[in-house]
Length: 275
Image 1 (tube, rainbow, N blue to C red):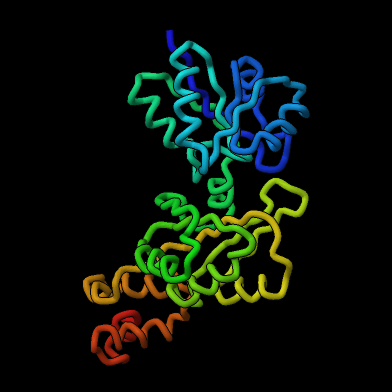
Image 2 (image 1 turned 90 degrees about the horizontal axis):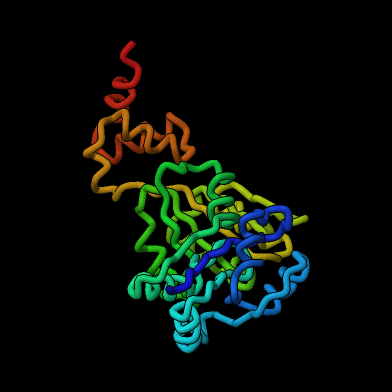
């Protein structure tokens, strides 16, 4: 009988967030596969758990996968963890999950903290539809290209970013998305210095240009808008709502609608003030 791969979510800062079920799975597993054995070793020590640890991270995933799969096929249970949060999100865990499914090895999630979900829920932006983009490319040109690809998506967009690239990424977002796009940037979620900075891109960039950039970051960007060429397909009411949603004053929005539709400002104003 084959073993089971458990995807165990661990705290992203506050130890109080680990679930009793996660503790039980870590205790009962035959081994724990960890992104960084030092980080997970410290976590297990705090929990009073002694367990065999195997490293499993981006640069050794291909080599380690065969070892872990062999253990699973021999009937051993493995708990897979990342340094913090839910494994298989922006880490190589997704690869071994795919292979386990291919080999009919059972994969069980043990839910818990997830940084991007936390950041989304406190952003104030729509949670009805969202896209998790994760980490953007390190090279500036590739990063801008990726931002161009998603700039017109209407759902909320979520990104991860490292502290040493935060300013560059926010600057590129200002250039590609426009400095008035609203964002919420969360850092040190669940930790002592937890912070959520909300505002327009230019304002948020200015904040981090004048304050220390420390911790791991989640950037949540308000959904974009349809291509301008399609704006005229909206009703005048929808067209107005589109601009009001961006924080544009109604009189300025009416002026822009007139420009978009090649109408006189008076015509558009009259439409919204029929009474």
